[in-house]
Length: 414
Image (cartoon, rainbow, N blue to C red; front, side, top):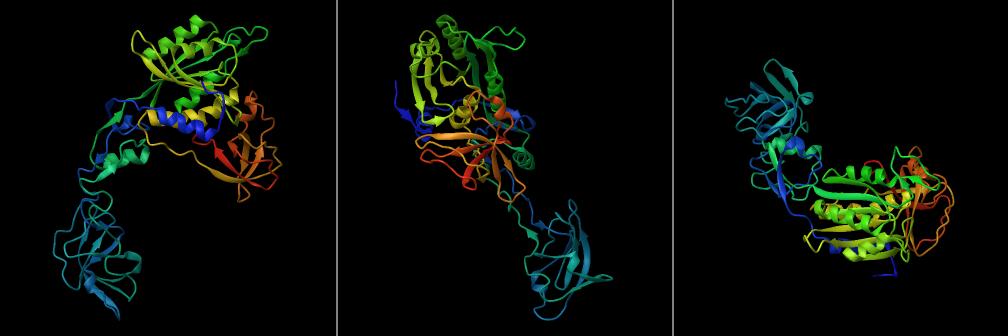
């Protein structure tokens, strides 16, 4: 068991180093592949585009026809449409009217955009400098070359990727099987929605927050195990059940270092689990490791997050999110970083990474960060009212209004 404080970066690197990605793939139609993880490199079976084609509406001809000095005059001998090529001959001093995407006629390598042409009957003319040889032509294979990787293994497939796959004529694609994640909250003081709220009890909010954050990772399959009460039997049974069905278990509550609780005892009994104090605020206590069922051989990675609602969110994005990407064989999508200026003074103690809730004012050119009230780790309202987390570095001290600070916007993240 480790008792010394870990920095955020140290803990993150230790976690990532211990993870072994899942195995297993499945084949899905491309409409079902959004946000799934590509299993293997996708090689292009064709050239895209398949032929040299025009990038503009205009006139196609050989670049050798361009006059270095004086007006160039060319005779139109036909028209090329997208999907209907011009199959005639375009010789010296001739051109073909061409539409965007149309196959370049034989002997043509240049397109003059229609706005730069003067048309008189079946003749076009243009002055020097209006076009250079090779202009406005898309080359065959310019986007994708046959046999070359179109998308790399591990890519989390986005809408543009689905379009690219479809452009190759591919209807089905191999993706990684979904990463299975079980999650539950612990604590005798917790009540599920719909239950009466006894004196000293609170409604379980962490499970819904975790569900929301995990659902944003669509390569994850979820198992919500509800609220597990603080008894050794209940906790052990919940973990054994989770191991049967999941690759990862995420819990909230009961991981404070030195705390005499059953969660910590059961975690240690079932596996190799580190209980860390992280030099961060909020979210200091955290557990990570693997738990095992010696009788069945089942096992799962375990993330034991703090019980305070804001700390759950912060530790999830600091440690769990990137770990799930690695376990799913996915290339991590970086969390966006914005540089903002503080609207007010902020107190900060050196020696820990702090995450402060704020709203960004984007109307001033440089984003201005305004804190959203009290920053206690149990105050979920300030998280709901914010649109970013300010990241105050480990060695940083107090900051003044106008100082620059890094911000993690929530848009697209939570």
